[in-house]
Image (tube, rainbow, N blue to C red; front, side):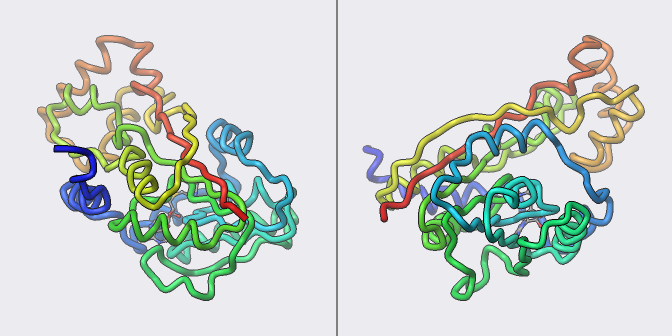
Length: 263
Ligand SMILES: C[S@@+](CC[C@H](N)C(=O)[O-])C[C@H]1O[C@@H](n2cnc3c(N)ncnc32)[C@H](O)[C@@H]1O
């Protein structure tokens, strides 16, 4: 068998289906309702912005923009920033955040990855930051590429676990990771695109919890309700190494996949 026998677009779809359904618009709206206006996870956004090249660029399309981590950081560098998202709740937060920072060059687009994008503006830069849990990655990558004049940036969680796999193993919880950047690089290769790869490390969602009650509540947020046995095993993991417990386990590692459009 050679690599040419592998249909990476299909392999991605099968893996995504096995990992479960991506979150719905309603679930993202619920998440938005719990988020505070102005909330920002500094280190990831700062590290991503350091990797964005704005030279000769006037516009940016932020796909799956959420509350606007990228759109808000990019707005001072550009004439126009479009925030595309399917969650009205997230777009409302983006608008509030833009207003409170005094930016009038951020334009919302209510749209899903899966919708028709024919009227979505072509921009110099297209970014999909932590927002590409789609069912059809080949279609998503073609959309990003088609809407970019100069550069595309996409981030994907290395390993596809939103929680340290060591914690899953300790709790004896089985969970299939999401498909990650390895599929993306291979699908792009088939499209004739040879991307650059870089990585960003940032704190995970369990870092800094002040005690086991807070910690286990957050684990339940991520994994769903924990049985008393799972809680007990989790407590053993938590108490075995206080420094590890405080860091919440392994940090997140994001692959930054980027490419230039030839113009
Ligand atoms: C984890 S947030 C990332 C937000 C922002 N890009 C960031 O890096 O902070 C994922 C965002 O993608 C959006 N999203 C998820 N699935 C989507 C879809 N099928 N179409 C459009 N947006 C989607 C969600 O509403 C959410 O705002």
